[in-house]
Length: 70
Image (cartoon, one colour):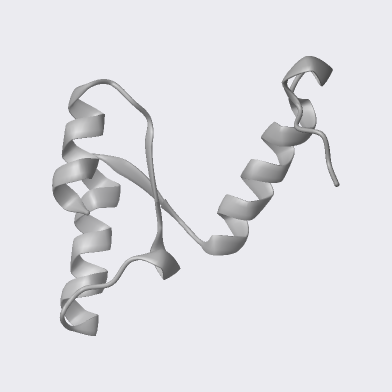
């Protein structure tokens, strides 16, 4: 995760990491890496926060960009 996060940040993308969707070898290193990435490259968010953001942006999209449901 870290290399992709750093590359995106370097290319001036706003990066986000969903903490429940990534893992590491141990729980301690997992939380240390999330903390480090949050401090340097990205916003570390919860799954609920990511879902809420995606729903909000989908609802704010112009009608011609919205996908037909069903």
